[in-house]
Image (cartoon, rainbow over the protein chains, first blue to last red):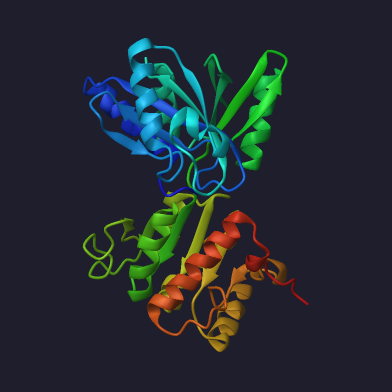
Length: 108
Length: 233
Protein backbone atom coordinates (compact mmCIF):
# COMPACT_ATOMS: atom_id res chain seq x y z
CA UNK A 1 0.00 0.00 0.00
CA UNK A 2 2.59 2.59 -1.04
CA UNK A 3 1.60 6.25 -1.06
CA UNK A 4 2.63 6.46 -4.70
CA UNK A 5 1.16 3.39 -6.29
CA UNK A 6 3.48 1.66 -8.79
CA UNK A 7 0.71 1.21 -11.37
CA UNK A 8 -0.14 4.92 -11.12
CA UNK A 9 3.50 5.79 -11.81
CA UNK A 10 3.35 3.64 -14.95
CA UNK A 11 0.11 5.33 -16.02
CA UNK A 12 1.88 8.68 -15.65
CA UNK A 13 4.75 7.36 -17.80
CA UNK A 14 2.27 6.29 -20.47
CA UNK A 15 0.83 9.83 -20.53
CA UNK A 16 4.31 11.37 -20.87
CA UNK A 17 5.15 8.99 -23.73
CA UNK A 18 1.93 10.04 -25.48
CA UNK A 19 3.12 13.65 -25.18
CA UNK A 20 6.28 12.74 -27.08
CA UNK A 21 8.74 12.56 -24.16
CA UNK A 22 11.40 9.81 -24.03
CA UNK A 23 10.96 7.76 -20.86
CA UNK A 24 13.06 5.48 -18.65
CA UNK A 25 11.39 3.26 -16.06
CA UNK A 26 13.09 2.22 -12.83
CA UNK A 27 11.96 -0.51 -10.45
CA UNK A 28 13.36 -1.79 -7.13
CA UNK A 29 14.39 -5.43 -7.67
CA UNK A 30 15.94 -6.24 -4.28
CA UNK A 31 16.43 -4.68 -0.84
CA UNK A 32 18.61 -5.57 2.14
CA UNK A 33 18.31 -4.06 5.59
CA UNK A 34 16.11 -1.05 6.13
CA UNK A 35 14.66 0.38 2.94
CA UNK A 36 11.58 2.59 2.70
CA UNK A 37 10.61 1.40 -0.79
CA UNK A 38 9.86 -2.30 -1.15
CA UNK A 39 10.60 -4.49 -4.19
CA UNK A 40 8.34 -3.38 -7.04
CA UNK A 41 8.49 0.34 -6.18
CA UNK A 42 8.47 2.34 -9.41
CA UNK A 43 9.92 5.57 -10.69
CA UNK A 44 9.50 7.11 -14.14
CA UNK A 45 12.04 9.56 -15.55
CA UNK A 46 11.44 11.70 -18.64
CA UNK A 47 14.24 12.95 -20.90
CA UNK A 48 12.66 16.37 -20.32
CA UNK A 49 13.71 16.06 -16.67
CA UNK A 50 10.44 15.27 -14.93
CA UNK A 51 10.12 12.40 -12.48
CA UNK A 52 7.26 10.46 -10.86
CA UNK A 53 7.29 7.91 -8.06
CA UNK A 54 10.24 6.87 -5.93
CA UNK A 55 12.68 4.00 -5.40
CA UNK A 56 14.27 5.07 -2.11
CA UNK A 57 12.47 8.04 -0.57
CA UNK A 58 15.13 10.39 -1.84
CA UNK A 59 18.52 8.71 -1.25
CA UNK A 60 19.41 7.55 -4.76
CA UNK A 61 16.86 9.22 -7.05
CA UNK A 62 19.51 11.60 -8.40
CA UNK A 63 21.83 8.75 -9.39
CA UNK A 64 18.93 6.78 -10.89
CA UNK A 65 17.93 9.83 -12.94
CA UNK A 66 21.50 10.15 -14.29
CA UNK A 67 21.54 6.46 -15.22
CA UNK A 68 18.10 6.91 -16.79
CA UNK A 69 19.53 9.53 -19.14
CA UNK A 70 22.16 7.03 -20.33
CA UNK A 71 19.55 4.28 -20.70
CA UNK A 72 17.33 6.56 -22.81
CA UNK A 73 20.33 7.44 -25.00
CA UNK A 74 21.62 3.87 -25.46
CA UNK A 75 18.39 1.89 -25.23
CA UNK A 76 20.27 -0.68 -23.11
CA UNK A 77 18.78 -1.63 -19.72
CA UNK A 78 20.94 -1.43 -16.58
CA UNK A 79 20.86 -3.07 -13.18
CA UNK A 80 22.16 -0.65 -10.52
CA UNK A 81 23.28 -1.48 -6.98
CA UNK A 82 23.25 1.10 -4.21
CA UNK A 83 24.40 0.68 -0.65
CA UNK A 84 26.99 1.46 1.95
CA UNK A 85 29.69 -0.39 0.04
CA UNK A 86 28.81 1.13 -3.30
CA UNK A 87 28.83 4.80 -2.47
CA UNK A 88 32.11 5.29 -4.30
CA UNK A 89 30.72 3.78 -7.47
CA UNK A 90 27.55 5.84 -7.50
CA UNK A 91 28.18 8.72 -5.16
CA UNK A 92 24.97 7.78 -3.45
CA UNK A 93 25.24 5.96 -0.16
CA UNK A 94 22.11 5.14 1.80
CA UNK A 95 22.00 6.97 5.11
CA UNK A 96 19.87 4.18 6.59
CA UNK A 97 22.63 1.62 5.96
CA UNK A 98 20.41 -0.41 3.65
CA UNK A 99 21.19 -1.74 0.19
CA UNK A 100 18.97 -1.69 -2.86
CA UNK A 101 19.12 -2.87 -6.45
CA UNK A 102 17.30 -0.92 -9.16
CA UNK A 103 16.59 -2.01 -12.73
CA UNK A 104 16.35 0.80 -15.29
CA UNK A 105 14.97 0.28 -18.80
CA UNK A 106 13.78 2.44 -21.66
CA UNK A 107 10.08 2.62 -22.46
CA UNK A 108 10.19 1.75 -26.13
CA UNK B 1 9.17 -2.16 -21.48
CA UNK B 2 7.12 -1.84 -24.63
CA UNK B 3 4.28 0.69 -24.82
CA UNK B 4 1.97 -2.27 -25.54
CA UNK B 5 2.81 -4.01 -22.23
CA UNK B 6 2.46 -0.68 -20.41
CA UNK B 7 -0.96 -0.06 -22.00
CA UNK B 8 -2.11 -3.58 -21.03
CA UNK B 9 -1.00 -2.99 -17.42
CA UNK B 10 -2.84 0.31 -17.18
CA UNK B 11 -5.96 -1.26 -18.73
CA UNK B 12 -5.87 -4.12 -16.22
CA UNK B 13 -5.79 -1.59 -13.38
CA UNK B 14 -8.77 0.28 -14.81
CA UNK B 15 -10.74 -3.00 -14.85
CA UNK B 16 -9.45 -3.94 -11.35
CA UNK B 17 -7.86 -7.09 -12.81
CA UNK B 18 -4.72 -8.35 -11.03
CA UNK B 19 -1.64 -8.76 -13.22
CA UNK B 20 2.03 -9.67 -12.76
CA UNK B 21 4.77 -8.08 -14.84
CA UNK B 22 7.74 -10.47 -15.13
CA UNK B 23 11.12 -8.92 -16.02
CA UNK B 24 14.25 -11.04 -16.48
CA UNK B 25 17.37 -9.56 -14.88
CA UNK B 26 19.50 -8.08 -16.19
CA UNK B 27 18.54 -8.39 -19.88
CA UNK B 28 14.99 -7.03 -19.43
CA UNK B 29 13.02 -9.72 -21.28
CA UNK B 30 9.39 -9.24 -20.25
CA UNK B 31 6.08 -11.06 -20.02
CA UNK B 32 2.77 -9.77 -18.67
CA UNK B 33 0.87 -12.47 -16.84
CA UNK B 34 -2.83 -12.36 -15.98
CA UNK B 35 -5.78 -14.70 -15.68
CA UNK B 36 -6.21 -17.23 -17.19
CA UNK B 37 -2.67 -18.17 -16.12
CA UNK B 38 -0.53 -20.58 -18.14
CA UNK B 39 0.97 -23.68 -16.49
CA UNK B 40 4.66 -22.96 -17.08
CA UNK B 41 7.04 -22.21 -14.20
CA UNK B 42 7.05 -18.43 -14.65
CA UNK B 43 3.25 -18.20 -14.74
CA UNK B 44 2.92 -20.37 -11.64
CA UNK B 45 5.51 -18.29 -9.78
CA UNK B 46 3.46 -15.23 -10.75
CA UNK B 47 0.32 -16.83 -9.31
CA UNK B 48 2.16 -17.41 -6.02
CA UNK B 49 3.40 -13.81 -5.88
CA UNK B 50 -0.11 -12.57 -6.60
CA UNK B 51 -1.51 -14.74 -3.84
CA UNK B 52 0.97 -13.26 -1.35
CA UNK B 53 0.37 -9.76 -2.77
CA UNK B 54 4.12 -9.22 -2.78
CA UNK B 55 6.54 -8.37 -5.58
CA UNK B 56 9.73 -10.46 -5.48
CA UNK B 57 12.34 -12.21 -7.58
CA UNK B 58 12.17 -15.87 -8.57
CA UNK B 59 15.03 -18.04 -9.78
CA UNK B 60 13.89 -20.15 -12.73
CA UNK B 61 15.62 -22.37 -15.30
CA UNK B 62 16.04 -19.48 -17.76
CA UNK B 63 17.26 -16.91 -15.24
CA UNK B 64 16.24 -14.62 -12.41
CA UNK B 65 12.88 -12.89 -12.91
CA UNK B 66 11.44 -9.92 -11.06
CA UNK B 67 7.74 -10.65 -10.44
CA UNK B 68 6.00 -7.34 -10.01
CA UNK B 69 2.52 -7.62 -8.55
CA UNK B 70 0.05 -5.07 -9.87
CA UNK B 71 -3.01 -5.81 -7.75
CA UNK B 72 -5.97 -3.46 -7.62
CA UNK B 73 -5.72 -1.14 -4.58
CA UNK B 74 -8.01 -1.91 -1.64
CA UNK B 75 -11.30 -0.04 -1.62
CA UNK B 76 -12.99 1.68 1.31
CA UNK B 77 -16.72 2.30 1.38
CA UNK B 78 -17.67 4.93 3.97
CA UNK B 79 -21.34 5.12 4.92
CA UNK B 80 -22.27 8.56 6.17
CA UNK B 81 -20.75 11.80 4.84
CA UNK B 82 -20.20 12.96 8.41
CA UNK B 83 -17.47 14.89 10.21
CA UNK B 84 -15.40 11.80 11.09
CA UNK B 85 -15.57 10.78 7.43
CA UNK B 86 -14.06 14.12 6.41
CA UNK B 87 -10.92 13.22 8.37
CA UNK B 88 -10.93 9.49 7.61
CA UNK B 89 -11.28 9.85 3.83
CA UNK B 90 -8.11 11.88 3.10
CA UNK B 91 -6.04 9.71 5.47
CA UNK B 92 -7.31 6.48 3.89
CA UNK B 93 -6.72 7.89 0.40
CA UNK B 94 -3.15 8.88 1.32
CA UNK B 95 -2.50 5.37 2.64
CA UNK B 96 -3.62 3.92 -0.70
CA UNK B 97 -7.33 3.13 -0.44
CA UNK B 98 -9.69 3.98 -3.27
CA UNK B 99 -12.51 5.60 -1.29
CA UNK B 100 -16.24 5.88 -1.99
CA UNK B 101 -18.50 7.88 0.34
CA UNK B 102 -22.10 6.67 0.37
CA UNK B 103 -24.83 8.96 1.69
CA UNK B 104 -28.18 9.73 0.06
CA UNK B 105 -28.27 13.10 1.84
CA UNK B 106 -26.91 15.19 -1.02
CA UNK B 107 -26.25 18.20 1.19
CA UNK B 108 -23.56 16.16 3.01
CA UNK B 109 -22.09 14.03 0.23
CA UNK B 110 -20.47 16.81 -1.79
CA UNK B 111 -17.22 16.93 -3.73
CA UNK B 112 -16.32 20.06 -1.78
CA UNK B 113 -16.38 18.12 1.50
CA UNK B 114 -14.77 14.97 0.01
CA UNK B 115 -12.35 15.93 -2.77
CA UNK B 116 -10.44 12.61 -2.47
CA UNK B 117 -13.46 10.30 -2.75
CA UNK B 118 -15.98 9.08 -5.27
CA UNK B 119 -19.49 9.91 -4.09
CA UNK B 120 -22.64 7.81 -4.17
CA UNK B 121 -25.95 9.45 -3.23
CA UNK B 122 -27.88 6.21 -3.60
CA UNK B 123 -29.22 4.30 -0.62
CA UNK B 124 -26.55 1.96 0.72
CA UNK B 125 -28.23 -1.26 -0.45
CA UNK B 126 -28.43 0.05 -4.03
CA UNK B 127 -24.92 1.50 -3.84
CA UNK B 128 -23.52 -1.83 -2.61
CA UNK B 129 -25.25 -3.75 -5.40
CA UNK B 130 -23.60 -1.43 -7.92
CA UNK B 131 -20.15 -1.35 -6.28
CA UNK B 132 -19.98 -5.11 -5.53
CA UNK B 133 -17.67 -5.27 -2.47
CA UNK B 134 -14.98 -7.97 -2.74
CA UNK B 135 -12.08 -9.35 -0.66
CA UNK B 136 -10.14 -6.13 -1.28
CA UNK B 137 -12.93 -3.98 0.18
CA UNK B 138 -13.35 -2.42 3.63
CA UNK B 139 -16.68 -1.06 4.85
CA UNK B 140 -17.06 1.51 7.63
CA UNK B 141 -20.52 2.64 8.80
CA UNK B 142 -20.32 6.10 10.37
CA UNK B 143 -23.80 7.59 9.92
CA UNK B 144 -25.23 6.58 13.34
CA UNK B 145 -28.52 6.19 11.46
CA UNK B 146 -29.81 2.60 11.30
CA UNK B 147 -31.67 3.43 8.08
CA UNK B 148 -28.27 3.94 6.41
CA UNK B 149 -25.88 1.81 8.46
CA UNK B 150 -27.99 -1.37 8.77
CA UNK B 151 -28.52 -2.08 5.05
CA UNK B 152 -24.83 -1.34 4.40
CA UNK B 153 -23.69 -3.72 7.16
CA UNK B 154 -26.18 -6.35 5.98
CA UNK B 155 -24.72 -6.20 2.45
CA UNK B 156 -21.14 -6.11 3.78
CA UNK B 157 -21.72 -9.24 5.89
CA UNK B 158 -22.95 -11.04 2.77
CA UNK B 159 -19.69 -10.09 0.97
CA UNK B 160 -16.06 -11.12 1.48
CA UNK B 161 -15.09 -7.62 2.66
CA UNK B 162 -11.81 -7.87 4.60
CA UNK B 163 -12.91 -5.27 7.16
CA UNK B 164 -16.33 -4.25 8.44
CA UNK B 165 -16.52 -1.52 11.08
CA UNK B 166 -19.33 0.47 12.65
CA UNK B 167 -19.36 3.48 14.91
CA UNK B 168 -21.52 3.67 18.00
CA UNK B 169 -21.61 3.02 21.72
CA UNK B 170 -21.53 -0.55 23.02
CA UNK B 171 -25.24 -0.27 23.85
CA UNK B 172 -26.11 0.92 20.36
CA UNK B 173 -23.88 -1.75 18.87
CA UNK B 174 -25.65 -4.49 20.85
CA UNK B 175 -28.99 -3.24 19.52
CA UNK B 176 -27.56 -3.13 16.00
CA UNK B 177 -26.38 -6.75 16.29
CA UNK B 178 -29.90 -7.78 17.36
CA UNK B 179 -31.41 -6.07 14.30
CA UNK B 180 -28.84 -7.71 11.98
CA UNK B 181 -29.50 -11.10 13.62
CA UNK B 182 -33.17 -10.61 12.72
CA UNK B 183 -32.01 -10.29 9.09
CA UNK B 184 -30.57 -13.82 9.34
CA UNK B 185 -26.91 -13.28 10.34
CA UNK B 186 -25.52 -15.79 12.86
CA UNK B 187 -23.14 -14.97 15.73
CA UNK B 188 -20.04 -16.01 13.79
CA UNK B 189 -20.94 -13.67 10.93
CA UNK B 190 -21.84 -10.78 13.24
CA UNK B 191 -18.47 -11.17 14.99
CA UNK B 192 -16.83 -9.88 11.78
CA UNK B 193 -18.05 -6.38 12.64
CA UNK B 194 -15.54 -4.17 14.46
CA UNK B 195 -17.86 -2.29 16.80
CA UNK B 196 -17.07 0.28 17.88
CA UNK B 197 -14.68 0.68 14.94
CA UNK B 198 -11.09 1.73 15.54
CA UNK B 199 -8.03 0.68 17.52
CA UNK B 200 -8.15 1.44 21.25
CA UNK B 201 -5.92 4.53 21.30
CA UNK B 202 -8.17 6.43 23.70
CA UNK B 203 -9.64 8.51 20.87
CA UNK B 204 -12.02 11.25 22.01
CA UNK B 205 -12.39 13.82 19.23
CA UNK B 206 -13.68 13.13 15.72
CA UNK B 207 -10.21 13.39 14.14
CA UNK B 208 -8.78 11.05 16.78
CA UNK B 209 -11.55 8.52 16.12
CA UNK B 210 -10.92 8.80 12.36
CA UNK B 211 -7.21 8.12 12.97
CA UNK B 212 -8.00 5.07 15.12
CA UNK B 213 -10.23 3.69 12.35
CA UNK B 214 -7.59 4.36 9.69
CA UNK B 215 -5.01 2.52 11.82
CA UNK B 216 -7.37 -0.45 12.21
CA UNK B 217 -7.96 -0.51 8.44
CA UNK B 218 -4.21 -0.78 7.80
CA UNK B 219 -3.88 -3.43 10.52
CA UNK B 220 -6.66 -5.49 8.92
CA UNK B 221 -5.25 -5.09 5.38
CA UNK B 222 -1.75 -6.08 6.52
CA UNK B 223 -2.98 -8.99 8.65
CA UNK B 224 -1.79 -7.52 11.95
CA UNK B 225 -3.05 -9.26 15.11
CA UNK B 226 -4.23 -5.81 16.28
CA UNK B 227 -7.20 -6.14 13.93
CA UNK B 228 -8.14 -9.71 14.90
CA UNK B 229 -11.71 -10.23 16.13
CA UNK B 230 -12.50 -12.38 19.19
CA UNK B 231 -14.44 -15.57 18.46
CA UNK B 232 -18.08 -15.46 19.60
CA UNK B 233 -18.90 -17.43 22.77
